[in-house]
Length: 230
Image 1 (cartoon, rainbow, N blue to C red):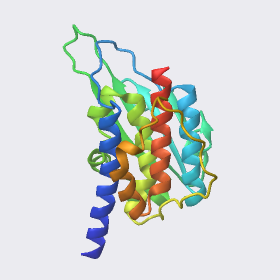
Image 2 (cartoon, helix red, strand yellow):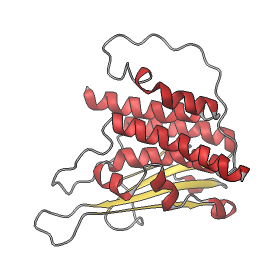
Image 3 (cartoon, rainbow, N blue to C red):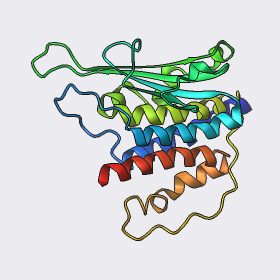
Image 4 (tube, rainbow, N blue to C red):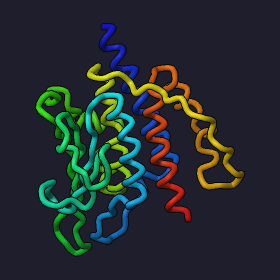
C-alpha cells in the first residue's frame, strides 16, 4: 500500500507540472493544414541536451530523443540528441533511455488521417522499467500532443523520462544543484512571470524532491517560449 501511495504521489507531481506548464504555454495549440513536421531548433536542442546531462550525471544513464517525420521511427530523424549533445544518439552509452516519436501529416484532400507514434527504447538492463505509452500519456505526453506540438512534446517527453524512472524507484530524484542566485529578470521580459504563476506546482515538486528536474523542464520551456516570441 505504501508503494502504491508513493507512486500516486509521483504521478500527481508529474501530472501537475506537465498539465500546468502545458496549459499555460500553448503546448496543445491547433495545427494547420501543412504537412511539414516542426522540428526542435538548434538552440532548443542544445538547451535540452544540457538539461538532460544533469540527469545523466545523477543517474549514470544517457537520456535522449528522436523525432521522425512519417509513420515509422526508423531511418534518419528530423531531430535527435541526448545528454551527450545534439546529434549524439543515446545508444552510444552503455546505459541509455530514448524517447522516440514520429508524426505524419496528410494533405487536406487525403482520405488518410494524421497520425503520431511514441515509444521508449532503452539498454537491456532498463528494459523492464521502461515507461510505457500509458505512463507517458498520463503525464500529458501523448500522440494527441505530438500531432499538435511535435517538437515541444518530444522535448518534454525526454525530460519526463528521469522523472518516470524516479517514480518507479529505479533512480533517485536529481538532487537540487547549489548555484548562485540568478540575476533579476527585467519587468516585461517574456516569461518573467512564469514562476509566480505556477507556485503550486513548484511547491509540490519541492516537497517531493523533484525540484531540480522540474527546473530542467521549466528552463527548456522558458527558452523555447522566448525564442518563439522574439
